[in-house]
Image 1 (cartoon, helix red, strand yellow):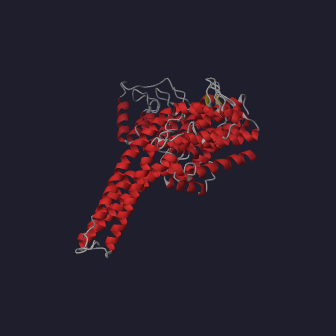
Image 2 (image 1 turned 120 degrees about the vertical axis):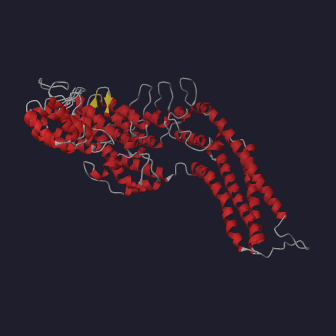
Image 3 (image 1 turned 60 degrees about the vertical axis):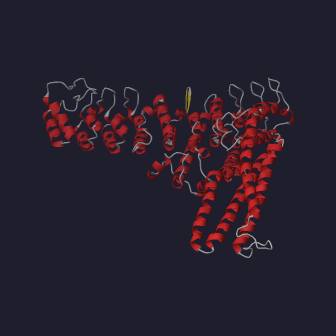
Length: 602
């Protein structure tokens, strides 16, 4: 900043005129003042923030005047700053004005390396997620900085700070470009970019919430083979991974690919550094904790010995995988362990717990036990985990004692005692309420069998016995009675059964609940059909106009039942009979296995 400056409050009346002309956007008046005061007009401070004429034009959004001012001003005066140390390029970068930035850089390239008082370069102010023109501005400034061999991005502090901002914004293509420009940015003391990627599941397929059909389209859609993101995909790449829409899938796949490439480049660079196992080991456990198998595969590909890394509590990737109940991570770890020909999964932690002990404890991630309706399903899933891991370890490990002299199964029983108690309460309440409803249906159906519509003739034969509607009534009433009794018996078995641990593993209690609910639903539907048939026989046979209201009224209870209960019933069926066989999990698991095998061959 030059020493000769003029602040607001001076006696020079032309400063007020200049402000007024800028507010009004009248270029003729501004040009006249420039001609009258050529030495002062571009140095004068026009407000308390120390804005010059050019800076104030940026702050007031006078975009049509900025180009003309840049043409008039000399290159030296383009470096004038406000009290915060911001140059015109800082403001252009912050506001996303790419065209103006191009003019400024074209006239004075040194502005690219000018830091404000907070130590930020213009490009660092450009990275503002979800702001208009953010990506295009950042891309332009990064390309210009890379052209400059003396760019301050070579500096560890500025470059690493920009890398962090790019990753947070999801600009993985730009972060990859910057990393290739300066490999030293892959690691900074006390801060790991790889750990930052391992904390962001939304950057990878493993963290995306998509349906089976979306996953299928994801794999079938051709990926963009490009180093940078096409302009038409900018906005879609910023969409949340938790609200994926079909039209976002191509951009999402591109985003995942760029994130994978960035992780691979970070791993490759860190592997050549000192203490690489520790630098890769921490992100490995963090990625396993967050279920990001892509990061796990990349790290183990570049450094297979990272599988032996343990944190301060003695936990390796095997321990973390079972603690967070992630079968994909556990499968990848065992696949890699075969390659290493080791038995690292048998190593205990600092408390003497092997991986089976840790399965006995409750999961570390909140929500794993509460993402299914009712308490019966988490208990079964936990038991399945225990049996699955038991098959992976040696018989000696199944009965091994930890430092507290406890074997794995005793820990499981103690830790899940409260869950089992809540499970019994839930099942009892469910069976009690449902059996009452089933009993009411059975009572009504039984009574209707002896009070047939239209009455009986003198010889005891129903008067409407030859009518088709009567036959529908009789069959429906009989089926309603049979299914309601089946439902009652199913729910009664909940009160009389022992429901031990192994019963839950065989899905017996959940099967009984499901059978009871399905039987109750069917009996309810047949009772409605029987009742509707009765109304038709009595009223609609003489006047067919009654038929439509009968059908509509009959459908209302069924629709209400479906609205309030079918979702829970389907969730029970899926949890009991389709756990581990869900198509979405199959596709992702197969993808992870293929990716792992490909890395093993290279």
